[in-house]
Amino acid sequence: MTQLLQTKRILLRPPTQDDAEVFLQAVRESQKLHRPWVYPPDNHEAFTRYLRLCNADNFWGFLVLENQNNVLAGVVNIGQIAQSGLNISLLGFYGFSGMTGKGYLTDALNVICRYALNELRLPRLEVNVQSKNRRSIALVKRCGFKKLPGPAISLKVGENLQAHERWALVPK
Image (cartoon, rainbow, N blue to C red; front, side, top):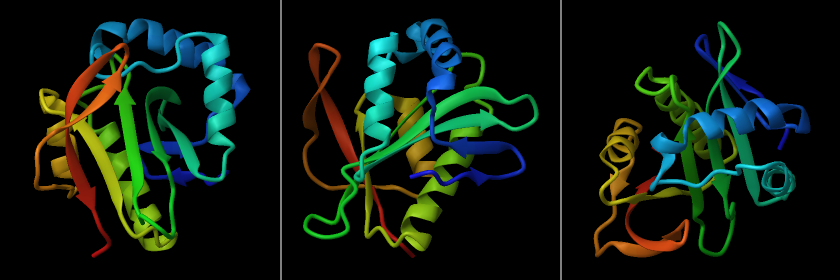
């Protein structure tokens, strides 16, 4: 997907090889923020794999850039894009140090979710959030996601299994 999405505050665009150095520097600077919640690509080989994934038909990756200074604020991904069968697409996201708490990811998720559900007509978005990750839970709540009933599910993050809550958003 080569779609650009923009608001007054943010630009969302697919990553390119030209983003590697800035991206990897942001990951290095954000390691304390990310652990144990997420393990983004942290070297050139992993970033290249991420770019290949972004070019797959069932995955969209977006860099979240603050518009005024073109600073990398975060990443939003939609994976397992399905328009038939299970009808579930999985959302993932993370911010970068120095850019959190400013509403950039809230803006990005709202724009991407609205686009995915209303324009592309994806039937449903889900996000799995680690049960102890209060900031991410607050973010998905702000964006209209509802917690799905049932027990937490275990998903591998880094080298360990972590309990995750399932949250979903459907078109209005």
